[in-house]
Image (tube, rainbow, N blue to C red; front, side, top):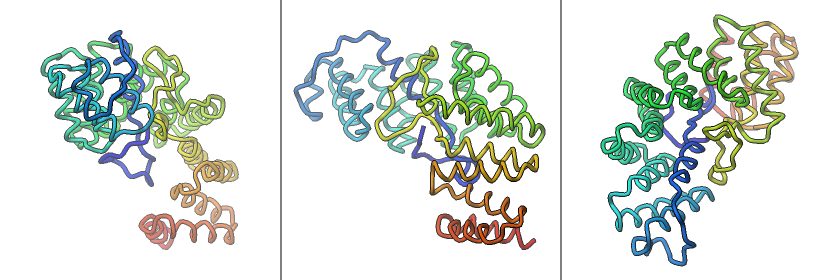
Length: 323
């Protein structure tokens, strides 16, 4: 999922972290079996309609990528039915995607206050709080959600990410193990487990990141899954539930580079750049590998591109190379 949030780690360092709540959330909304009617009115008049129609319109706008309109439908629906927790939770999710992280936290907290065993709301709030830097609170939420629904593989994955942020790497890897044991077709699960293994187990990291690349090339889903492991298209248009192939190739290249398989690492970084020509970290890493291979001309070209994409990363790399 591409997120406009307060990220705990820079995109240059490790890519944008994935928040895997979207597909679960939409499936959860639809699971209530609401009878929806086609909307013939604008967002400002939704509160005069049945709440089920407001839900349909908000979800429709949400999935089409019109997040502002989705929030407007949710606001209008809640004006007519302020006690509708499903719609309130949906608004919290929409606000998260809009970057209104604190407002999202308030909406989800109200849902959880009234439904303390609502595992999906707990999972989503854990993602929100992770992005607010409230890691201990985020961990409490996701652990509470997993106590209710221990087979939720996306919850396990998110728990792993939080534990990694808390420098509890071995525990994080175990959560990734549990996620993969339940569902082994998601490239992000393997990519982040590989990232966590890189320092102590580079061969394991290589195996995991290679699998992430393989899954991303054989499945055109961007890592999207529903709670039962069935592929789904319930993602806002223009957004991605997965991290993107460039990130998988970047992490694969990192493992190859650590294992001193330099030509293969160069190829992996080249593939990352093919999938995203603005991936500054891929240009930085390829430049280093090319210097190690004695290809100074192409390394210089990579550094030139890096300087245009990310001047701070360029300066840091040049300092490192001089040292």
